[in-house]
Image: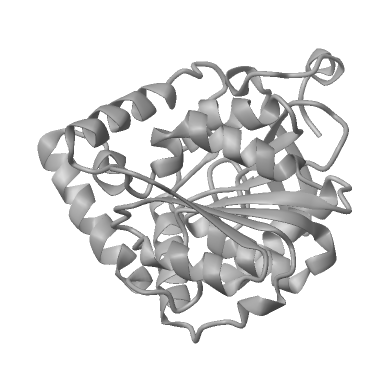
Length: 289
């Protein structure tokens, strides 16, 4: 593993300063960052479409890392991780489990956002003993309503962003209301707070593979989510265009121990727009016996 000895000896409390590290397993060198306390069950963050280490909102990471060991990582073929990006959510889940086991963890909490929430659902079904609790934000179940339209929406909003010289996430993650526009600008500014040791952007081929995986997930037959017995916190904005909010209601209803939080006047990035509220709810959920 890489990373300085000092960073390992001193607990890192800020995502902005978390050193880049690597671990190699299954023929892949995974890039990751770690912060927060060293004891207790770690929270593994599973990223969204096109997301790399620098796409996590530092307020959400730091907020959860105030009480828990948090680990973010680039899955196979993404950002600074090696290998080729899988074209199915199931393969992504296997790679994520390889990474988690390479760090020596026997039990973890998962926070999956968007595509990461799809990966989290597969992990908890494939390896139930590995997962203690699940946070699923801005995501939906296999075969969920509108999920197969993500490619079309992503392409439309990428073009819109190019024409207006904006980041596509301003359109994809946030509503077009005054609150949504402001929240989007603030979120995008926070993503730039880290200036040293930034990650590589996703390669176009990897992005296309992820789009294929999400499209396939949207076309799959629904899974039996009653087999997920872990506590599940489901969160989203009320106006998610990417993964329609109906999917969050559906997820929370279909898992035996689900609870749902919906943020008003918010879209796909509701947990970033309402980061204070989300962190408070997530910490309370993770602390519950």
